[in-house]
Image (tube, rainbow, N blue to C red):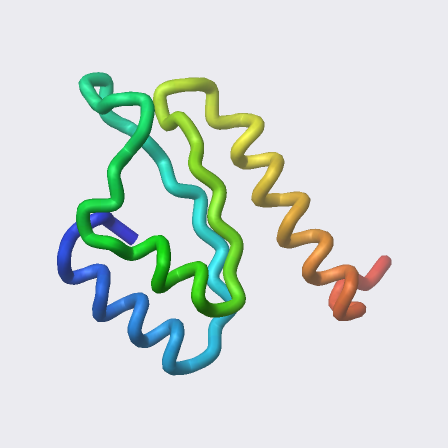
Length: 86
Protein backbone atom coordinates (compact mmCIF):
# COMPACT_ATOMS: atom_id res chain seq x y z
CA UNK A 1 0.00 0.00 0.00
CA UNK A 2 1.20 3.49 -0.70
CA UNK A 3 1.08 6.20 1.93
CA UNK A 4 -1.50 8.39 0.23
CA UNK A 5 -4.94 9.51 1.47
CA UNK A 6 -6.72 6.82 -0.60
CA UNK A 7 -4.98 4.12 1.47
CA UNK A 8 -7.78 4.64 3.99
CA UNK A 9 -10.16 2.75 1.68
CA UNK A 10 -7.82 -0.25 1.67
CA UNK A 11 -7.40 -0.18 5.44
CA UNK A 12 -11.15 0.08 5.96
CA UNK A 13 -11.66 -2.98 3.73
CA UNK A 14 -9.03 -5.00 5.62
CA UNK A 15 -10.44 -4.04 9.01
CA UNK A 16 -14.06 -4.58 7.99
CA UNK A 17 -13.20 -8.08 6.72
CA UNK A 18 -11.12 -8.90 9.83
CA UNK A 19 -7.80 -9.41 8.08
CA UNK A 20 -4.67 -9.60 10.22
CA UNK A 21 -2.58 -6.63 9.08
CA UNK A 22 1.19 -7.15 8.73
CA UNK A 23 3.02 -3.98 7.70
CA UNK A 24 6.65 -3.06 7.18
CA UNK A 25 6.57 0.71 7.22
CA UNK A 26 9.48 1.85 5.05
CA UNK A 27 11.23 5.19 5.08
CA UNK A 28 12.34 5.00 1.45
CA UNK A 29 13.40 8.43 0.28
CA UNK A 30 16.97 9.64 0.48
CA UNK A 31 15.76 13.02 1.75
CA UNK A 32 13.37 11.59 4.36
CA UNK A 33 14.14 12.19 8.04
CA UNK A 34 14.97 9.24 10.25
CA UNK A 35 11.49 9.23 11.77
CA UNK A 36 8.61 9.17 9.31
CA UNK A 37 5.68 11.14 10.75
CA UNK A 38 2.24 9.60 10.43
CA UNK A 39 0.58 12.59 8.76
CA UNK A 40 -2.44 10.48 7.77
CA UNK A 41 -2.78 9.17 11.34
CA UNK A 42 -3.01 5.54 10.28
CA UNK A 43 -0.91 3.84 12.96
CA UNK A 44 -3.47 4.12 15.73
CA UNK A 45 -6.16 2.71 13.46
CA UNK A 46 -3.92 -0.17 12.35
CA UNK A 47 -2.83 -1.00 15.89
CA UNK A 48 -6.42 -0.93 17.19
CA UNK A 49 -7.06 -4.26 15.42
CA UNK A 50 -5.02 -7.48 15.25
CA UNK A 51 -1.87 -6.30 13.45
CA UNK A 52 1.89 -6.14 13.45
CA UNK A 53 3.78 -3.04 12.33
CA UNK A 54 7.54 -2.75 11.98
CA UNK A 55 9.20 0.51 10.96
CA UNK A 56 12.24 -0.02 8.76
CA UNK A 57 14.81 2.07 6.92
CA UNK A 58 14.16 1.62 3.21
CA UNK A 59 17.61 2.98 2.32
CA UNK A 60 19.54 -0.06 3.58
CA UNK A 61 19.90 -3.60 2.28
CA UNK A 62 16.43 -5.16 2.16
CA UNK A 63 17.62 -8.77 2.70
CA UNK A 64 16.98 -8.72 6.47
CA UNK A 65 13.48 -7.27 5.91
CA UNK A 66 12.69 -9.96 3.34
CA UNK A 67 13.95 -12.67 5.71
CA UNK A 68 11.84 -11.26 8.55
CA UNK A 69 8.74 -11.40 6.34
CA UNK A 70 9.51 -14.97 5.25
CA UNK A 71 9.92 -16.07 8.86
CA UNK A 72 6.65 -14.42 9.85
CA UNK A 73 4.75 -16.12 7.01
CA UNK A 74 6.42 -19.47 7.71
CA UNK A 75 5.56 -19.27 11.42
CA UNK A 76 1.99 -18.26 10.63
CA UNK A 77 1.56 -21.18 8.21
CA UNK A 78 3.31 -23.73 10.42
CA UNK A 79 1.14 -22.85 13.42
CA UNK A 80 -1.94 -23.53 11.26
CA UNK A 81 -0.54 -26.83 9.90
CA UNK A 82 -0.44 -25.44 6.37
CA UNK A 83 3.09 -26.64 5.59
CA UNK A 84 3.38 -30.08 4.07
CA UNK A 85 6.54 -32.05 3.40
CA UNK A 86 6.54 -33.83 0.05
